[in-house]
Length: 145
Image 1 (cartoon, rainbow, N blue to C red):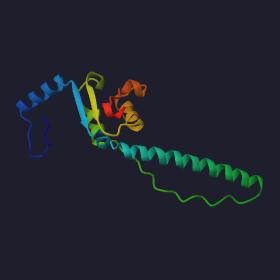
Image 2: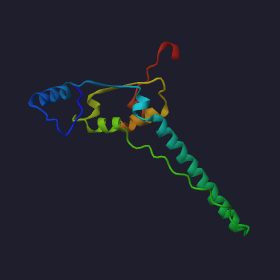
Image 3: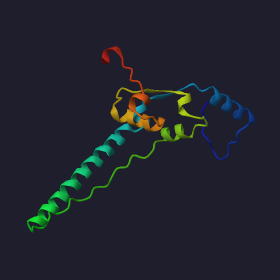
Image 4: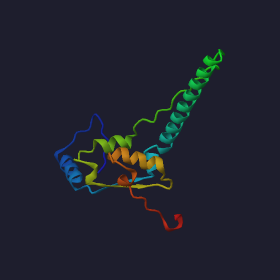
């Protein structure tokens, strides 16, 4: 039962009862096209940019140190690029705010043609799991093996 909230809408006792029954009987959540719902590509891009920025900072520090040793001015600093920050998606916020004790109580099924390391890490974070293996089991089609 999904209903969009509007200022003029009121939640009836019947709606509340249905919602409560749904939540208490929820056994699984299916995320179809999970990579899009979790914006996995943006998260991967952010991680790559973070690594590249860290490497550039290390190189600049080494160059500055060498320049001081040889009394040469350090190379011009690279122009700072705007960092793309992958904010929590609506899906992550929804899962976080579900009125259930723990996401361990429900099975989360992610369907996607492109499940990779980044999505497994996202699921680890959402489920507060200690490892990717604890967070997810990858099941592939016969032709994908």
